Image (cartoon, rainbow, N blue to C red):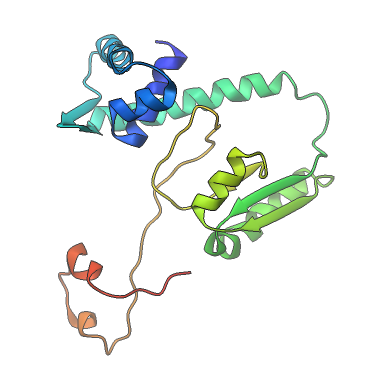
Length: 194
């Protein structure tokens, strides 16, 4: 098992496409296919279901994705630790979205401040697309967003987890009395979002 195979696997899982992954990573599509075939052979499990041009993770693929992300994170941490000789003191510029900044950040920042009191923190609030663009142009040190799973070999992903989604309506709304709503029923409605 090679790191580039894991990076390719994660990228395919994110993009749901062998051809787009090959293009993004600068490989031929056949090279991407060979990497995944070798990985599947080594694991003895099929990682993707291929339906036309779209690919989706099998249950084993979803489980392996968690391990692959952790492995790449640990590799990046190991590399970073070789440069880690002093106490943290450089400024930290974080990008996030409004709801996370309001709900999640106070506790996180308080804990960070206890461990690294010399680090000055700056927070930028914007859309996920804008924050990703800023991070890729080195305008942010890290981002914390709600979005579809994403991966890029230039990133170090520290955490990715599912968040519950809750839909709230007035008791006088016609849907408030329904007990068995489908997602399609909700998608026809208007929403107010942060």
